[in-house]
Image (cartoon, rainbow, N blue to C red; front, side):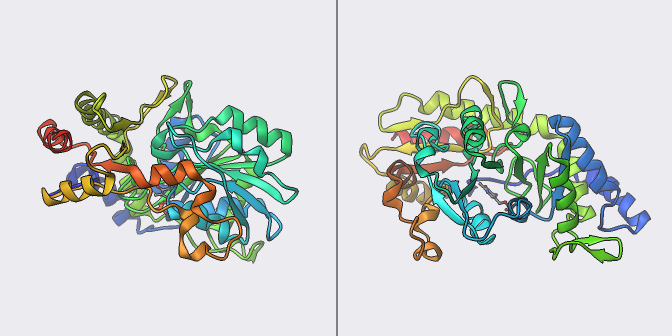
Length: 364
Ligand SMILES: *Cc1c(COP(=O)(O)O)cnc(C)c1O
């Protein structure tokens, strides 16, 4: 069986060596040595002032949005072509997600359609670097400055990606990364916020630990700290990141070699300004001979499990039925992409022979 992804693991002995320190110290969570090490290494790697680790990416994003204390009912412009988490993080803060359509080529937010969605209730933009394709960060920055809006990126897919030589961690007011087991870099479960804003970082460090400040609580906080075993997994995985990405690149290059130019198939090739992490390999099937669902079924018959990702759009979820801004017909490009896209298997240990088998079936 070839699944869409497979978690990368450090050598077993290396992880054992790392967690030996936790055994000896009996310091299992609450800002231990592994937690501090990982935060420092990420700050250094991405040249960002603050990294705040969390139990998962979703709560990191939810807390970062909460950090700006927007009035309840305020509007946040985002895209529906994302994982449920992005939209939920907005809604769970008592804010209204307003869905902007996406670009037909890289599937990120269509910046030419943002301004028409801005009202006197708009407070922020939450764009997504889908598949590690970077949003038009400079255009978004310009719009945000002009209208006094905050920008919080869902960078869950863009770990270690750079745009014009600058890390994906450095754009907007803050960027959220997910370190879930299925991501390019993982801590089993985990996430982080990278930000240059010291006030926000301070808030996040309080809020993820019940809002405690000494004996007092200065916020009605929550509990979403990263534990030491998760951080240790991150410390180990970070050592192997370059190797992991290089192996993924071989897989992506093979797919591109075999599939580019084939009739009925459109690949998403990022701009030359982007150094990719090869987290996903999305392919658009435009209905020539077989449609997306038929290709999915065909591969499934051969024990190959791609993923309809992202499908369905978040603006068509039942939980947003009562939202005036919902409805996939309002974002026709996103609707088209969601109905035709398939993410093919990609992970470090996927062999060229396996990629060829997948490509042979598709080309056939
Ligand atoms: C994985 C993911 C998240 C959520 O991250 P978790 O760590 O699983 O909570 C949010 N947004 C996107 C786009 C993701 O892919």
